[in-house]
Length: 129
Image (cartoon, rainbow, N blue to C red):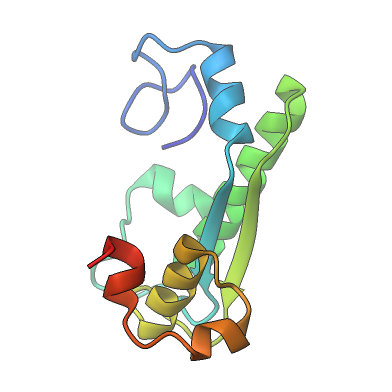
């Protein structure tokens, strides 16, 4: 979903009763966008091929980069901070163990590899089990 009030939901945020202050808060939130650098198959069977999706790029990696940059420019235009960061996971595709591990590291605040190597049970960290 694009942070654009002129584009109706589900493609944008239009028609939901939101205003620019909501979009500013949304874009200033701390958020990590994870993209797999191998997620570049334009023939993936589950890749959306509608006109709006195709305009963003030929595959998920290109579309993710496009979306991140689009949102950064919206934040700049609205004069708000952009709290998002972009991380590309080497060798990862759309559904990939490496994506899960990096995401889990971010969720539990163990983004350095040495601390992560000491984690034996991710379920205990994530769910307090």
